[in-house]
Image (tube, rainbow over all chains, first blue to last red):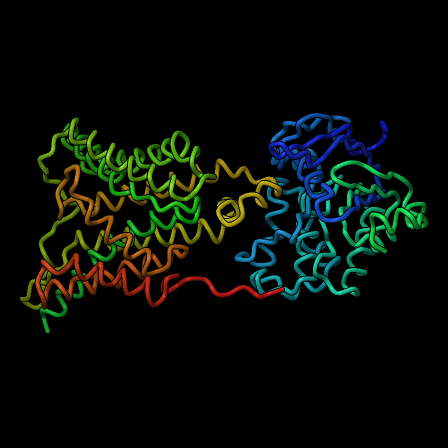
Length: 236
Length: 292
């Protein structure tokens, strides 16, 4: 586990009397994609929000490149190299496409990823760079959200339901892109998805959550082949 | 015709002051989604400070500068000490805190400086321009008022649209959680937003003080007119606040000139109710978002 960029150990998150994340342990290495799967209410988003500092952890550890980040402010976790693409994409509708992108790299100053690099990755965004993000389609917003996260040159990327509400063909494009980012840029990707089939098709490892607990932690191919598990928890 | 021109010029001048108060309200609304009913009290305090500095130093411009600096500090302190604690709570909490702060500031000012309104000097002559032997109801001080407010509005537009700091402030106001995920220190942006708003509010107080005098409750009507202008232009739109202020100033000037000064406050409330009923988002509210 020591060569992992992101390490989560026995993490617990409570909302009052309800335990949303219950002792989850996982690790994501450089260049790898780990998919976190499960039904609604399984604790996937709570896990991601706790890792990124948006929710308070009740117990456990989260290490980023070997350094504990539990209790560190969200803004400082970003500065340590973790970026999150939130559920619902989180683009700021009133800002233009380019303003949204610039925002992602402001904290890096001159070291931010050049806009041209993002436009090379997402050609559709360049055509819409002066348009408000509110005018973008769902797929374009997802590209914008991922591109914005990349502006800060993160080492670890957390993605929350990137396929939500997207057409199958757009979902396939987004998944291919995520795989490419991990393989070619060495990003450690933690991918939360309900669309288990798509997520497992690009992931190296899969973790299945149920009521906040890990019920399976296996290589993605093993999970995809486990018919009982697929029927019980993944819905395909 | 001369009367119409006089009323128009007077409306532009007073409208500029309403625009400044509206800008202060809009800045805070955009930053923290709070209608700052304490704005009238805050600008009253800084105008009293200016009055005290001018009285002791004899320099108008020193008092002017100190009041603006005091506005910056007061806005930041109020956000850090009071508003930070209610920002994330139900909207009514912030409204109650703002109203409580207004009462506190007005009572405190009365205890320190007394309740008798005192005069306040203008920056420039208030004697109207002489055009072809006719003296207009528009003076060098009115010119100063209009230019300063337009200058501040332009400066704010440059800050918000043309600088990285402005982009951070807009992001923090529009989507605080997303902004934090992008490394924006949202708390600092809120503090800065309140400081900027209080700065603009202080400016409004300095500009209007020569005509309303300085006293604990003298600025209450200005807050009502400023609020009406902000709602008219759209609480989310700094540009709308400026235009709303000028339009309201003109409308109230015509009402005052043709129908009587006693109807001015009533007319402002009619405008407020009409806007809320016909176009609640204001004249310059943002457009609809694409459904995805």
